[in-house]
Image (cartoon, rainbow, N blue to C red):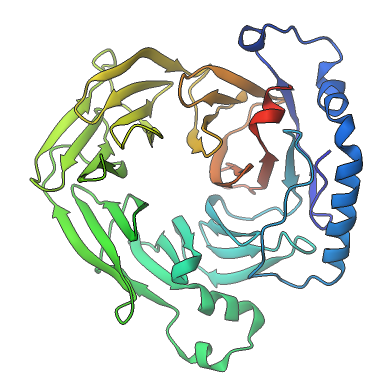
Length: 400
């Protein structure tokens, strides 16, 4: 039911499935093909009207790099993929308006989702590991290059790389590095009141920068924590009760906190039942907990703890298989991408909401999400990668 954008999408080989333990229902033999479309038949008229509006908009569409969001015209949780095959592995992506900036081993591209699915090359021969669009600040934050520098690109400069209509922008340098940092592993942009923090994991340190508005218009150093006992692989920042800043980070042994005011580090969860190294997947600060409680995902599990290391729920989130990628979705769900299936679970309880079974084993990587749209990519080292997307919302999930 979810139509391709500009002829650029096609159905992907996934089978939706709902665990009967979740809703007390039992899928029938015909569910794979019929259940989703039958349940949403009453929306067909609305979808057709929406599609007509979208088609009209596309007639006049050029590359739309400053668009307003268009409401997806189907509530069916169906996975689609773009036909474009990227020659190098897709490592990250970020939505810019409705369009998708795609970072690969070999460059930065823009996938025009508002028109014919055309791909524009923006930067060649540079590796992009992670990125976020901050439209209000006119910047794209990236970890990129051979030395994994934290480089910030100006969106106006990137836009002009496509449109070539602003000679003044063309004369200016299109980027700035943040604090000459190299060897960046991971970062997180955290908004608190009117301040935007950038917390960065380095080889054996964590740095915090804060956005300084004009005349500076850049991230400036705020705090630095060096010589950490455990090397950070994943990092986040929480504000306890609107007052105390705390860094949370994941390492190969577990999860740790740094009190920003005192600089004191301490452990909040070490999975003692795992003897080998741990792979941390996600740190989710739970909503409505005053920044005090988290879901920490590692290996094929997740635990609920507070910022002082106390277990807050006598529940362990258990994925059906070892995920290659885990991400919090703002529908208050958490998704895990495994080789056999994509699982969607409640972030509050860990209960299974739904599963997409792969028709064949494949590795997938989460890229980006906004509202009810989730983007991810196939991971084929040395081969081509494709972008997948799905529309997901809570009401449709309940009707699987």
